[in-house]
Image (cartoon, rainbow, N blue to C red; front, side, top):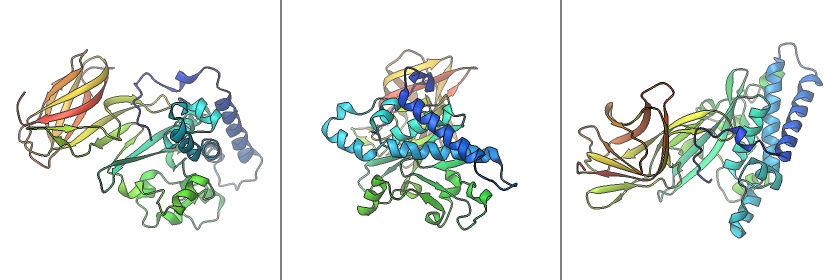
Length: 350
């Protein structure tokens, strides 16, 4: 999955040129949901609004999974990486994409058909401390979040043994699915999809993020802890390898929602000072960078423009402590994002 930073002003309106592929899928989703709601006979206790919202979400997931192929993405990435899709329209029209492309297209479509939806990004290290990632989505159905893994064509039923019509529409959120002791029994999955079959053939678990992820962003909000730093004489350098490289606000893929992400740094030794080597920043109003450890905070003013941000740490940071860096607005309407190359912690004050 490619890790991208979308500045807060980005939204679904950014792709409003001619988009025949997106428009076609949106129309298909509406037609299928209308048929499900109006042409089938439903029991009196079934909420037809829930039926329609479920139909919209399920059809959007199925169409994106069918049309945006991760196996085709792999073939193109190996031969012509410069030809990978640049946006949702290209992913759908050319049939190329991995989880990030699939979820972005899904959120784009869901938003256009009137659903409230958000991304869920998962990050975890393997035994060699190499970071892995996956992206899925949640959609509000009858006011409750329902989890959809678009890549694997999967959602989770609340009661997998119930046969009543209403029970077929009871879809679990990610948190509810994660808490299940027998998650597989609740899963409804398109197991014939080629990428899914390849996972099983290679003895891989498509859903290992449920148990392995040590950090995730929900609608671009949350905390991601960076991998162990490399030592550089009294300083420790943290790089955002395989994870988002920003602190602060960013837009949630193809929606108008804006999240706020923080970063965690596990101290390798006693440290007193830090520096962010920036690639860029976008700030409005008055904001501060907050470094927090075990309930203690050091508040640092953010002055624009800049390419580096020095920051103080709370007193008494010891090896093993986790430092959380976040951006806090000081005035109404203030927002800020720092896009960075690396973060350095030091045992010296400057």
